[in-house]
Length: 448
Image 1 (cartoon, rainbow, N blue to C red):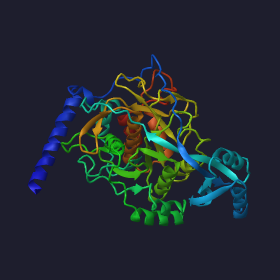
Image 2 (cartoon, rainbow, N blue to C red; image 1 turned 90 degrees about the vertical axis):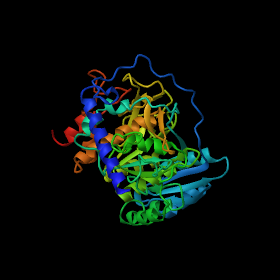
Image 3 (spheres, helix red, strand yellow; image 1 turned 180 degrees about the horizontal axis):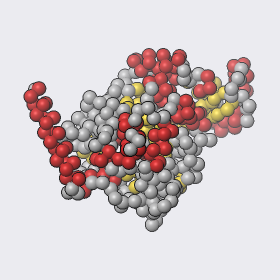
Image 4 (cartoon, helix red, strand yellow; image 1 turned 30 degrees about the vertical axis):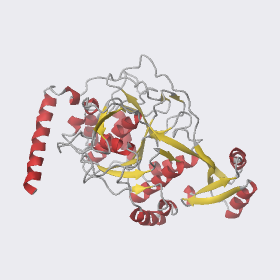
């Protein structure tokens, strides 16, 4: 067995060396360095019909204002006929999960919204994965060449840098993820409450560690989407199996926020974010969303969740990458420093015909004909901003691995400064600041 393994590794090294030589000579165009700038779209995507937004019936997420007495909170909730069924977080991130009387969600929401004792209120919205299924035929990993991964790999493959995949779990047993997928965290279970009860800080870190130990983890993919995303970001290279991720040496930290239905909600994502604060993760990818204006970019609609996002970015020094969505729709929400919203391009280097776009877009990345591995270990070709987002997130992993001492704002700045752009425009509503160039970004991180 040892001899067979050694031979396999040697053959894998030879294969990668030959492949890289072919890339250098332009004989392997699917992975060759991209010389194309982004193209301004000739026609914008055709928006899909707006679906009805889903949320938990008769349930509100309520955050008290600073220095509010418990007596005042209890009184206000009682007068609004709201019953506290659970809490999460502590201090400035404390959230009351409030059950309203049947059919009184809207009126209770308005009443509490006018009360000075509360700083943020939202419904518990539900989100779907941003995936468009496609035929499982291998078309070549063009996206690796588009963002200059092979040349970046000369310096780093992201070895050991963690990328947290908020999804349906990921199948750690597939060859592309074996040995590199941590236990992770299941934010959909009772044990998630052990993390969220403590909130940020020493108590939260302690309870988060206990909760993480008791959690069953997220090494099984209950729906299938998470493995596709994880292998896009970090599938092992040089193992003679299937595909390579953008950061093939990175470690995957799976966070299960969705069940077999493929749906998640604000509560699960907040639980996952508190686990990030307790576990020290710095890169988060969330490939879920909803039709604008109901998606994550709406800070007013998801006020408690955004306070968690802000804590992770400003206090914990992390970066969050989210998919813009596949509705072909305009998103009017503003750019936010603490959220990196990623649209999708196709192999022609133009906006994909399904991608959302708008004033909230930070980056773009390949999202059409992306070759990855599914939870059964088979090669799949998929479309969606579900994949452009982890491509950019794992580029950040390469940058951080090249220079681990960089603060998050500098990693973000490097990604922006390295971008392929559409002409001379520094920012567009289609591509944001552009598509990061992995090789250039890694060189910038090293001061070269």
